[in-house]
Image (tube, rainbow, N blue to C red):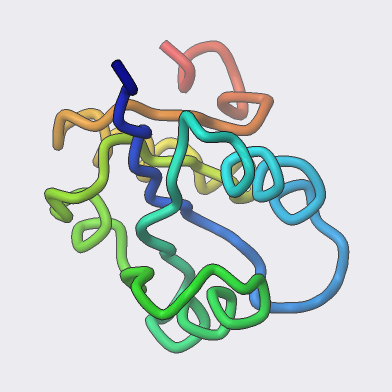
Length: 117
């Protein structure tokens, strides 16, 4: 019996060809592991999310968003992968958890212990 892949909404996948952790480590894993399927991208704008999908060859069926509420409201997304600079983590993670989504976050989780708690 095959298990359906976890559907990932990827927040912060660079639309620039420059090196980043999300492009070097997280994207290859989520894109090539049968346990996951990238179904949505969120960047600072819908346009940069669409550009990132094209640059990284993720296909035409990827949903593209420019804000976190649209990303976490997508019923097709199970897990939100937070791949942004640390100061931006908290509002993204809070929105995802409030929407009932699982969360993967780059490290460190937060700027300090109080923020992580």
